[in-house]
Image (tube, rainbow, N blue to C red):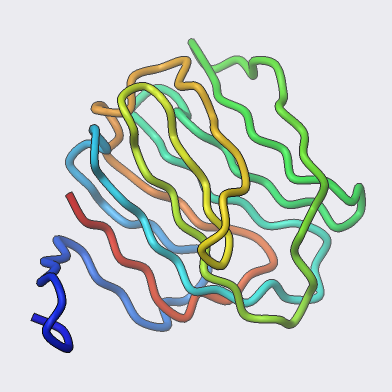
Amino acid sequence: MIGGGVGISFRNEFFNPQTPVNIPVQGFSNGSRLRLVLLPTNESRFQVNLRTPDDIVLHFNPRFDEGAVVNNSTQAGGWESEDRHPNPFEQNKIYTLEFVSNGGIITIFINGNHFADFVERTPSHGVHLIEIEGGVHVHSAHVSH
């Protein structure tokens, strides 16, 4: 119980891991949440991938060199069509980034504000690994179900 509020049990919790980070999970089904506190560095890109053994369910890729965030996925190892959004991140500022599974849609929040919805092309219940790579320092990562 935190401050008299709702108690939250995190299955996986990591603090200040080295990048790249690989977080093992057992599915990312309805109600699952990934919460990252991170600091984009001076590199041009970073990415968060929700992976099954064969494919990427969600590729979240802020690109400072393009001023965009690209969301995508793979099927049979090939990239599908990109969803592009304006990049709200600034380098060297701390952000809270959350991914929430909502019955076939992964909702993305930045600093508690809705950023985008990504319609799953591959079911997220098969996610077994969360990869975080590129120009980002991860202060903390929490996965809850």
